[in-house]
Length: 188
Image: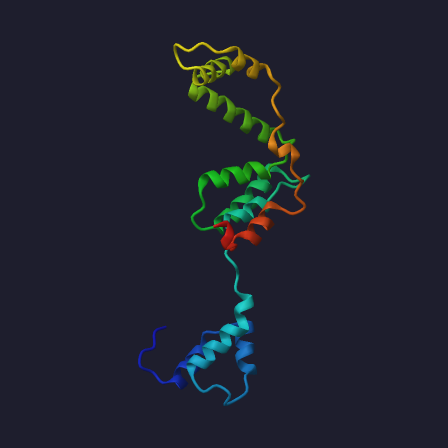
């Protein structure tokens, strides 16, 4: 409904006709003669119902969706797809990653998807472990250069443990952490 060049009184009365249920009950509870302009009415309305506004979900919220212990794959997929519809401009890679993360680790489906991914990834590059070793040797020792004794010794040396093995385990969900630090200017 579009009202142009209409008095505030008519705007307030027209506004009341657009309300339903709780909003209409709130409007009826206003004291008579307590509203002086449509701007005042809209401000009071927004302040009263701002907490009722539904928040848009973001892609981080998908990480909280996990397959329950006795939940079928079809039910989980339906719940996951319903959640993805609530997110604007969702990147397919984020969607795929969140879906795989939400599957039960013991799920045969999760195992087969990961196995197919690894086979496809290796197949695209056309190399197995031996080819990867050869390629890494070529990168570390360019053509014409022979590896020195020192570099051979470094290759035999046991590798140090990965950095994440020494980290403190999280006591909160990653989505909670990301939500708390998203507005931190020091991290931007």
